Amino acid sequence: MAIEIPYKIYLEESEMPKAWYNLRADMKVKPAPLLDPKTHKPATLDDLSAVFCRELAQQELNETDAYIEIPEEIRNFYKMYRPSPLVRAYCLEKKLGTPAKIYYKFEGNNTSGSHKLNSAIAQAYYAKKQGLKGVTTETGAGQWGTALSMACSYFDLDCRVFMVKVSYEQKPFRREVMRTYGASVTPSPSETTEIGKKILAAHPGTGGSLGCAVSEAVECAVSNEGYRYVLGSVLNQVLLHQSVIGLETKTALEKYGIKADVIIGCAGGGSNLGGLISPFVGEQLRGEANYKFIAVEPASCPSLTRGKYAYDYADTGMICPLAKMYTIGADYIPAPNHAGGLRYHGMNTTLSELHAQGILEAVSYQQTDVFAAAEEFARIEGILPAPESSHAIRAAIDEAMKCKETGEEKTIVFGLTGTGYFDLAGYKNYNDGKLQNYIPTDEELAQSLAKLPNIG
Image 1 (cartoon, rainbow, N blue to C red):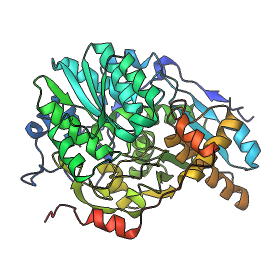
Image 2 (spheres, rainbow, N blue to C red):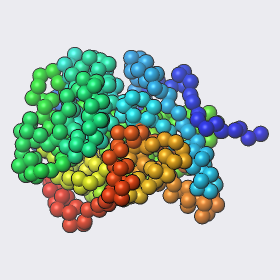
Image 3 (tube, rainbow, N blue to C red):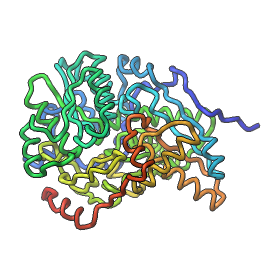
Image 4 (cartoon, helix red, strand yellow):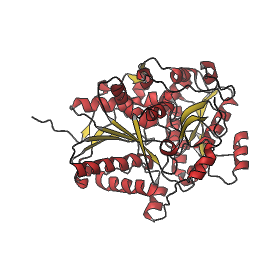
């Protein structure tokens, strides 16, 4: 007798992960090491500890331990909003007329509105454990800044956020949530740092980029005693924390005997995508299963689909460690009309290596196509998705329609990383017909890539 699959698959608290999964431990070919920006030698624990919390730096360098225990205080915090539901998109399936089965892991069921809190609380915990006064960070669309503000408030830490200027102006309510939780929020680039001043001199009137904001946040951290810099994506420590998404998803699927065929995530720096797919990639690397993994990125910031796999600076100011990743250049600044988030110039080193090996596929979409998918999903499934998440929705719909053409009954799983209630300026522009697509030319990308560091 077939088991009836509920709309929402909930796990018990006892089924929550007690350890994060470190995918790199199962990779035969490891990601290339981070390099010191001055010496170009592999970054050491002491090098990274000057910028990051020491225990987080240890996690960043750990390539041997497959599982790292989640401290009890973090697990207790997770219980406020985890386990998150795995939802069967029955209504979407019916509307599309597809034989495909579609599931989404919903990470928007917390006040920050996104998956970012999974790593924010971990990083704040380690900062508090180290005895720090506070932390600095950057944020683009604002989900990470919001999550970190909440986490720092919980641990009574000072939180200084540099928000990409175009988002600071477009999303004032996201900014106010951060301030409500006690964070200071500065539009980036700003006149408050030396790097910010240099960027403004070189790019007058710029709306900024994540690379700019990273540089300012790092300068602020290293210039103030008792502070460290924390990052919401890109780093392997963040993928480690976000593995709770994939571990819960895997447990929920196994609970009902469901085998995923296609797993999809939006991709900016790689945090939610890496967290969702890591346990499944580990299975594949160990020869236990086989999946199709798809990274979905915006056409206006196409690191995986049009970038170069090379060492590059993680920030526009060129003060962070060098990372070998798919990149379109640290100097690249997305168009101001880009409303869909995912605006980082590079991709996480682990995901970049998986893409180079052919394990991870990548596609890109223009933002009008993404918002069209978001609107269709909202009307059918009843959740207003974040623009970032909507990239994954677009790809999931396209994969489902391929199944309709071929008659294949594939099971598609995608990450719904958060809600879009603070992104209504983008929705308004889409509804008013004012949302413009922007695809960088080959010449623009070549100009940015020409500034990559020369690493022998």
